[in-house]
Length: 108
Image (tube, rainbow, N blue to C red; front, side):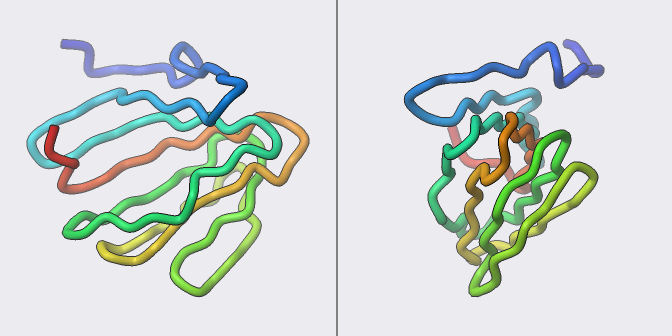
């Protein structure tokens, strides 16, 4: 099993929708990478019984958490507690890459 990742090795783009991949899935945590090209959106949604965070690796975007909407850029952590709607739109001019973690992970 690989315990070390360079996120750049996993970054991709899809023209029809944002790209996402799972970097690690354990019994208690899921870690993934989401890449959004300019204008792409991850629609607002909620995870019942699971907390989530986004760490902005590169680019900038508009994040919605609950009733709050904010711009965030590289270095920002955005948290979404269980049951709270959250989503993101790449409102910048370059790729928005996000490290994402959900705990506990979704059941597969």
